Length: 171
Image (cartoon, rainbow, N blue to C red; front, side, top):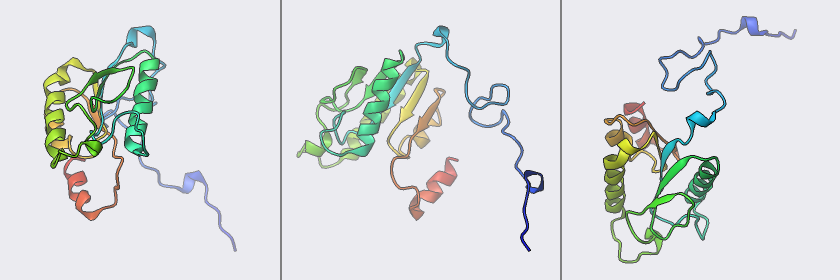
């Protein structure tokens, strides 16, 4: 015999509460349609320094950051893009290094330049309404200790065992 279940038979979790990290407007987690008084939002987009934006080769993360940055500018937001100095953007460009690291043969430790960029963003964080990192887990520790709201888009693999303790620590 076949059995069927209805929604009444399911045990559903309680609805989201205000204790979550995002605001809830009248039970809807999506904000109301922005009006002119909400503009412009001051956003920092922080990209990897490996490739210029837009990238000339594949570079999926850099391509996504470029598209997102250009669309946010087109919507009227005040965007500052932290990326290599050879990037082309309609946003304000803050370049901690003059050239994409992938083509900079003299750079032996790219992490040092990313740390320089992270510190520059931290020093200027108070100038923004929101920070959006595209550097995987690098900003978690430093930026969880400052008041400007931020998110990190994890563009890499999420299933690696060595990442799980990091995600658990900063969840």
